[in-house]
Amino acid sequence: MKELFFRMLIPVGAGTALAAALALLRPLTRRRFSPGWHYYTWLAPLAAMLIPLQIRLPGQALSLERGIRTVFSPAAAVGEPAAGAPPAALSLSRWDPGEAAAGIWLGIAAALLLGNLVRYGLWRRRLVKGSRPVDCPRLGRFTRRRVAVRRGGTSSPMLVGLIRPVLFLPDVPLTDAQLDHVLAHETVHLRRGDLWIKWFAMLMRCLYWFDPAVWLIGRQMERDCELSCDRAVVADMEPEQIRGYLDTLLTLAAGRPVSPAAAMGSGGRFLKKRFRQALKERRTGRITGWLSLAAAAVLLAGTLTVSGVLAAESPAAGFTLPTVLPVPEIPHDPAADLSPVQQRTSFLWPCPDSLRISALFGDRWGRRHTGVDLAAPVGSPAVAIADGRVLETGADETWGVYLLTDHGVDEEGREVTAFYAHLDGLNVSRGDPVRAGQTLGVTGLTGNVTGPCLHFEIRQDGHPVDPMQFYISAEG
Image 1 (cartoon, rainbow, N blue to C red):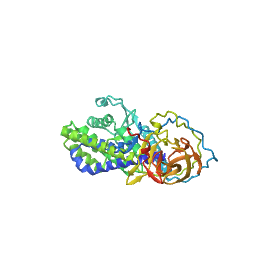
Image 2: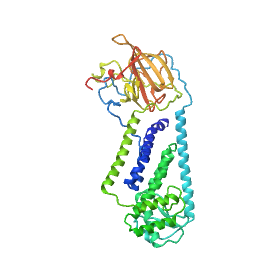
Image 3: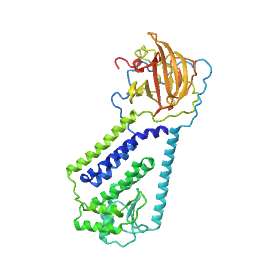
Image 4: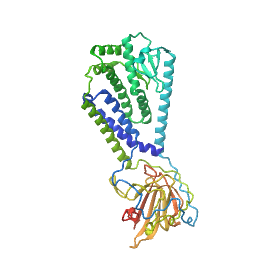
C-alpha cells in the first residue's frame, strides 16, 4: 500500500500543476473558448492524476532482452546452501511512517466515499418519498431515452440517477414554455453524460482528498457545467426565446442539490453570470473550435509526458524498516541453459527473475548512483555472483536490509566485492561461505525506495564500478 501511495504522488502533482495552469490561463481562454471547452478541460488534470504512466527516455533505463553474458534460467538449480550455523534473523521492527501515511490516506478516502454514498442515498430517499410519479408526454420531444418523471420534493428541477435517470420537477405551476425550457436543459445533461462526470469528480475528491486542487476543480466544473448547458440550450434560440429561458431560470432559482445530481436552479452572483453568458454571441468559429481542441490535447499530453518521465525516474519517496526473517534456500543451477557466449564471464546475474533495470550506474538526480537497480517482485531470489564469503549484513534507513560479499581479487589484484540492498530477507549470516548461484536472500521494498527492486553494486578495492561492464556483450 505504501508503494501505491508514493507512486501516485507524482501524477497528483502533475495534475495539480495542470489545474493551476488552466486557472491562470482562464482570463485569456474564457474570451476565446466556449464554456463547454472549459468544462471538459477540467477532466484533463483529473485524468492526469489517475493515469500512472512511466515514460523512459533514451538512456534513462534498460530492459535486458539480449546481450547478457551471464544469465541463467530462474527455474534452474544451483548447488546446496553453504555449510555453517543457521542464519540469524534481522529483527528490525520499527514504526514505518510511509505505511502510516498510506493507511491514513486510504482510511480517510474510504470514509469520505462511504459518507458521500450514505448522504446521497438518504437524500434521494427523502426526495422520492416527498414526490409522486407523473406523466410528461412533452419529454419525448427532447429525448428518446426512458426517463421517469416525478413532481415534488424539490424546489428546483434536477436529474438524478446514472442507470435509470429520474427527473424531479418542483411542485409549482409551469407554463408549457417553462416546462420546455426545463426539459431542454435537463436532457442536455442527460445526453452529455454530466451525471457520470459528476460521479467521477466526486470519486476523485474522495481519493485525493488531501489535494486542494481536486476540490477547486470540482467546484469549477459544477459552474462550467451549468454555463455550458445554458449555452447549448439557447444555441438555436431567437432573442425573445432566450429572454423567456432566462425568466424560467429566475423563476426556478433555488437551493443546491446533493451532488452528484444535475440541477437547473442556482442563485446569487452565479445566476447573473449565467444570464450574461447566455446573452453572449453563441457561435464559435471552426478555426477557434479546432484550436481549442488542440490546446486541450497539448495540455493533457504534455502533462502526462512530464508525469510519466518523473514517475519512471522518481527519487526515493520514503523508507521502511520491517521485521526481516530468514527465508528458505531456493536452489539454482548456474550451468543450466547457458549458451557458450554466456559462459565467458565468472560473474552470474544477481537476480535471475529480473532482466529489467530501472536505474543505471552514474549521475542521477544530481548525485552519483553507485550501482544498478533491478525492478523485481518482492520475494525474487538474489544470488551470489561468484564463490566467496559474506563480509557484512545489516539494515539502515537508506539501504534497508543489505549484505556485502567478498569474491577475492581480480587479475589486476583488486579486491572484488558485491553489495545487495533493499532486500526483504536474508538466508546467510556474516562470515558464511557462499557458492556461485546460491540464494543469499530475496528482494523487497526496504529502505529508501519507491518500488520493489534489488540495488546491486560491484566494487573494486571498495570503489563502486559500473556492474554492466561485466554483463553486456560487445555486440549487444
